[in-house]
Length: 375
Ligand SMILES: [Zn+2]
Image 1: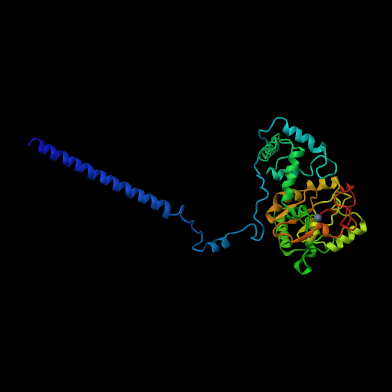
Image 2 (image 1 turned 180 degrees about the vertical axis):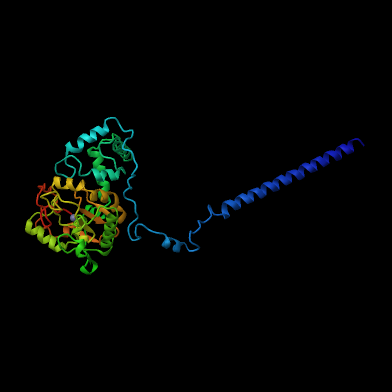
């Protein structure tokens, strides 16, 4: 008798325990199912709401676009921060070393001896995203950071290895140069595939033709430069075109006539045959033409507002520079036409490809048809 209630009591407790266990199990199952449903059935994030309504395309079309849609993605160069201070923590002595070498360094970055690197300082500054001068600690700090990011010793001092690494980057940004490096030469577009610049867009009344996309991008760039005050009525020559599409047959005839092709100063495969390359009036030192590669002239250009504006802003419009020539820009918004092997082109007037090209002599009066026109 005394056992029965205890037994009954014990059985009740066990039953309650079982029910409770089953309840927990069901709860666990429900929780698992809910979790699984969350993981598999619900998307990662709710779709972003269109700012103007249901049609996302309409929203994109309605948004103001600073860079027209047929330009390549705006990226190449950073906009320089206006409020940056030019003092920073840099490797000791680096700023002083850069300030010293800026005007004294003897080197041959493009195969011919030069003194100093003021010609390239604006382009290097744009690469480092700093507007501070080469003699500042900010410049040295930015250079050290760039060197570290490119697996170079972060000395903060501009040396051959650092400039070479930058030059390779800048060259790779030029589709024409990459094609050329493979031993190919893009074909020239048919005359019907070219548009003609207006008389006010050319230098010295010389007609200029470009592929339509390149001419449109050039116009947008000039408009932006005008808004930013680097092109004005004070000097209407600034950013006018002094060379654009060049007929390869005429170029080849000139090579043969002048017997100077395939050198640094002239090539049997010029970027100007693509209809995408343009030579722009930047500035001209007294006694020099706008395409003279004399160092004094290039230095004069590098110090101009317009060149400094271009190295920072031209990338937004798809233009890249051949850094040896501040005036030579190539539009990258469309690829050059398919090409032929350079070896199949007429080589009259050129030396064999395996010979070293001659060192050009700076020519003070380098006007448009003179020997110092390069690409
Ligand atoms: Zn050129």
